[in-house]
Length: 266
Image (cartoon, rainbow, N blue to C red; front, side, top):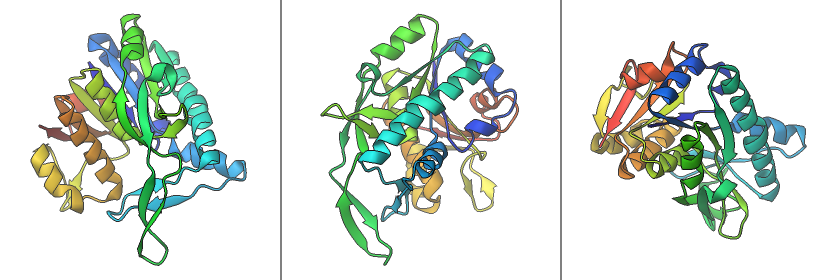
């Protein structure tokens, strides 16, 4: 059993062999897919006259600020347009995919972040209202287990159910980590547009969790989010976390074989 996170940056440019490769992985031991799609959210927001706003944390991590209107657009695009496009592509390639989001069946539960600490335009730290961004508190895997038991490959959009029944924006990588832990996945694969972690001009191969934690401040904001998620997956009992490119031939098989990727172990 594996969980595969498909990043929004690579979803539209996966190698042509990716879908049959996913089908083989699903048939051999079961698979759950969690996806991103932030670029589509930004595009639709702009078309609707609601320009996206991004904030930066003191550690340099850049993320979307989610006010109420953005939360509505985020839910519409992630659980609708992006999720169904991925399901259509998978089904066309012979994968028996079924799309859901974290709201369905209370699959992903989260609490609203009350306050966010950001770095403002002047370079100073500032606390702002948390909006409709969520911190994942639990994953209820019964819906996923039911779909897997019926022979489907669940495709999960990272929209979570808040404590008051509201839809919340949660980070896709961390959602994948939480889903992987709750479904007792042996591995979680973060499929992105690069081969893995690059340090000092070279690709980092296999490393332990302790080394990954020490490396975090030097990685860079985009990849740091994946390392944080990878560590959370390991802490949840997943055997290993893999960061790999989706633009290579047979990207899932190659990642599981540890070819040209970064593997993080407990």
